[in-house]
Image (cartoon, rainbow, N blue to C red; front, side, top):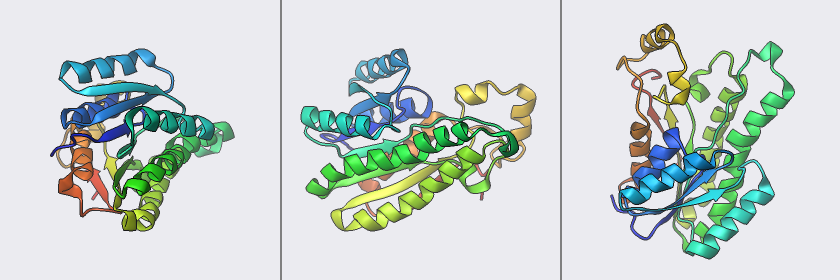
Length: 247
């Protein structure tokens, strides 16, 4: 799978799943723009790792929920690199709490970043893709968007919304040779899962057929397939990477 000459943007690409995706696409030959909004050190470390493995990476700071900032960022990327060929909408936040006590601002914050942010970035990137009549867009959803998760009505709603967005975009952009797909991770070894007690982790694993958490690299591999020529005939689909947690 070769991405030589392709320009990729990975939102929330500085750590966790986003970092793994950035490293994988860079290893395949793409010039990867690693987006972050608040942790510059993590973004710098990700780009350093990309360059250490012989790849090309750049940092781009913007809030995906800010429409004007998104427009400026993609304009600057295209001016510098000449194109945007691949977009991975990975940026996401959580503001967990039971629905009865959830603050409206916590609902808005999660929907704005996790769903509206994907819309804004895809809209900006697709303009350039349509000119070239080639593009790959991958939205990172979640098992929570399919099964739901108590204490995460905002997160589950946003991740479910990404699936509808993916399908509608796939229909709109297919005639321009732009594929749009989603990847829905299950429980992945990240900073968030590391905060769970060993007892909670073991309880969760009882619901996973493979009885273990996945790795960020498992999600990166799924994204790599979808943006490569191997995945050229796949669009409007969701690839579930959850170890059999959700069937």
